[in-house]
Length: 266
Image (tube, rainbow, N blue to C red; front, side, top):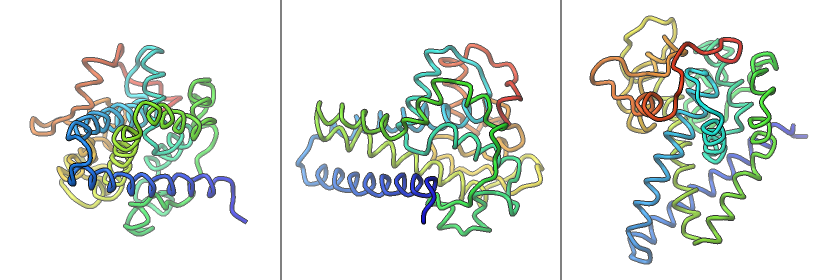
């Protein structure tokens, strides 16, 4: 009998399969001239929002690492965007990601591509992680995070319903496309970010700075830098290491760039 967690993860993977099929149909409709090119520009804007704001800034740099502070309004924006990006609930994602940082490229790493296989690592077929409630106590104490995690699919499908009411094609371009982009970004960092590129810091693991990962993840490619300084809201240090998420954090979202609360993040 399947566990509730495995069933939940299977539902996420099934949703991603549907998203990818929908995007292919949308691209076909665009190429064949059934819909306007304007849908593509709308989709790219949604992609940037949900990958940059929802995934790399929200889910990763803010909720998982607490690398900066912001106001409550932005917390809700980041929380909603991270949820709709469909990479997993905030509570579970934070716990798993912190566990990964504590056990990177070891037998305990939930998604070391060399140990579980590149296909499994890319497709979120990861090992169960053994993170504790203590590692996510800050998230469990936040009603907003608990709400979005508890009502994960309801939040996603409510967004889809609103788009469908406005225009059914918006479901493809404003949800399915950015969700596929977020999926691609996480997969690229998980796999390519540990096998391709260069190292600036000797951190004892195989995380690397990769321009390929950077391209596929909307700027989250300087993974060796990140593993060396996971508390830093920035990832790019050299002049060529462009860091769009770091710029947005510094100039738009953050109201405090001091070191994070280490009781909440790794």
